[in-house]
Length: 578
Image (cartoon, rainbow, N blue to C red; front, side):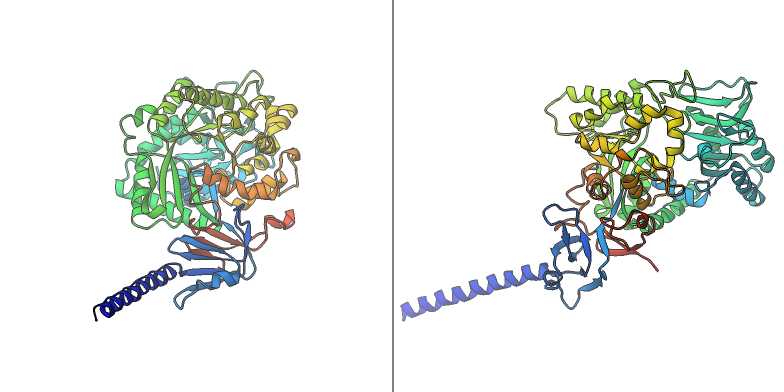
C-alpha cells in the first residue's frame, strides 16, 4: 500500500510537470502570435542574413518573424490583422539622415520658394502676402537661390538682386527671406531700418553684409551677418506670449509629421535644436503624440551648454520615439552663398576663400563637451578646408584616448573634399553624413565656384568615400531641399538633374543597393540605433515603407514617379495613399 501510494504520487508529479511544461509551451506559442502580419510582398530587408522575403509578422511595435507567406501565416490568430502587400516593393522606412524638423513645418506655413524660377516670382509672392498682413507683421519665407533662377536680375551684386522691388511691395512689413541653404537671407528696407543697418554698419567676423561698389547694402546678409536681422525678428517673436509661440511651433510639427510620413520617412535625424524645442519634443513623445521617430542634436554655444548637459543623452524616450544623442556645431557656411571655407580661392570670387563661421577653439571646446557627456559630435562642414579642419579636430580628440570605443562622430554634409582627406574618414571612423540631392541641386554652379578640377575630384565624392571604406549616409537637409527621399535616392544613383538631364560627374554615383543602405542601415548606424532600426529583421522595430516601384531594379526614370503607398511605424499604418 505504501509503495502504491508512492507510485501514485510519482505519477501525479509527472502529470503535474507535464501540465506545467505544456502550459509554458502554449504560453510561449501565444507570445509568438502576431498582432499584424504583412503578406504577399517583395520585401527588401537590408539584412545580409535574410536579404529578401514575402511576409513579416509584428507583435507590439517589433518584428517577430520575417519569411515566406506560409511561415508567417502560422503566427496568425483570429485577432491578427492581415495586410496584403499585393506584391509591392517593401523596404525599411526611410531614415532622414540630416534635416531640420521644425524647419520643415515652418516651410509649410511660411512662403516657400524652392520651386521659384525668378526673382520676380518671389517679389510677387511677397506682394500677395503683404496684402493680408497687418502693418508691422513680419513676412517670412525660405528657399530662394540666385544661382537656380532662369535669369539674373539686371541690377545685381554677385547674382544677388537689390532689395528695392521687395521694399516697394511691402513698405509697411519687415521681410525676412532665408536662402535655400539657410546660410544667407534677404531683408527689405523696413527690416534693415529696424535693425539699424547703415553704410557704417560693419560686417561681423564670419559673415558679410553684401554691398555694391558705392557701399549700399543691397539686402543680402551672409552667414554670421544674418544675426543683424534675426536679432530684431527674435525681439518681435518675444512680443508673442509663450503659449502663442508654442502653438505656432506645434502647428508646424503637425504639418512636418504628415509631410514626412506621406513621403515614407519613419525616422528623422534633426540637425540641431535648442533646449526649449528639445523639451517640447520630449513632451510630445511622452504623451504619445509623435507619429515618427526623432533623433536630435543639441544646437547651442559652449557657453550656453555649460552646466546643462548632465541629463543627456536622452535615449528612446516615449517608447522609442525620441532620442537626443548629439551636439551640432559648424566651421563654415554654404557654397551657394560663398560661405564654404576653401583651401584655395573661389573661381568666381578671386582672393576670397569663404567663411570660418565658428572659431576653431569654440569647436574644440564643444568637442570636449561631447566627449565628457558621451554625446556624438556632429560638425557642419562644406568646403575642403572646413572638412580638413574638422578631421584634424577629431583626430586630435582621438589621440587623447586611442583605446576608446568608436565615437561615430560625424561631419555633416562633407560636400567638397581634398582627395588626400578622403581616406581619413575610414581611418578616423568619421561618418560622412551627406545628402545626395545637394549634388544635383547645386550642380549648375559648383564648377563655376570651384573650377573643373576641384569639382571633379572632390565634390560630393560618394563613390570615392565608399571605396575608401567610409560610412556614408543620406538625407535631404530639409527644408533646404524637399524632404522627399526618392529625389535624393535618384541623385545618388544617377547624378542627374530631373529637369534638364544635366549629369554631374557620373563616376561618383553609387549602386541601388548602396543607396538603399545609405537611407536605412547606414543612418541607423550613424545614430547608434542599428540594433533597432535600418533593416527588417526579427526583434527590430516594425518601421517600413511600401512603394509602387522596386527601387532595386526599376528604370532610372521610374524612380521619381514612385508612389509611397503605405508608411508603417511600429507596426501601425501611419500613412496610406488614396
